[in-house]
Length: 248
Image 1: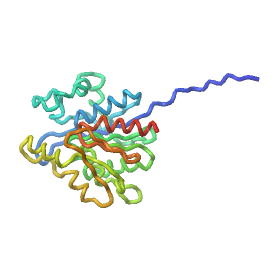
Image 2: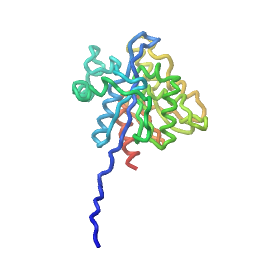
Image 3: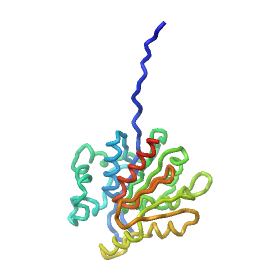
Image 4: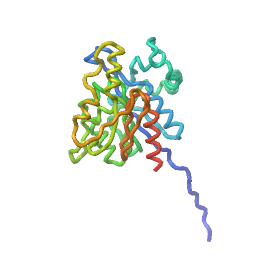
């Protein structure tokens, strides 16, 4: 007796949720602030090239706004070298992904393999003290997901606690925007930019190991399922660590 058995050998593609900050106004500089282009587009490129499915959401939903200095077409020329972001921005199908993002309300974590938190200037205002985002990170981590954050997005890790009350970063090695980079940025614009510095606060925490590399050099760290990138040049490296970790 024989039977025809149709077994699909096509696995579901890995799915990454990228979380970008909503637009805000800095209480320090009074500038409009948002996400940083390269921290979204460079990881997006890495994930899609690996065959992953990527969804971009924001805490509140709606259209996203980028920090002006991260825009490759900004008059400052600060990010004029960023051709990946320029291509993303000029592609109607890609730009539309930022025009009306879904919020995190009703998010089903079971649909994703990894959570990737994007930085920018807005996270220092809208992510700090945001208990809903802290809960999302903690729940993702405790559900066995890979959790990643880059640049100022790592400010979420200063306060995120697991269900046992311990900080997610307890006993872990991680990175984020460095004091040397904050000093450079302040000097570049001639004023204080951020309300606090991540490295200062991380180094004041007990039972965690915050590390940084040279200023504005690609640097990402993996400690188990927690992956962090130092600044805007570290997004692709952090994404590759996510891919490597999920591959295992």
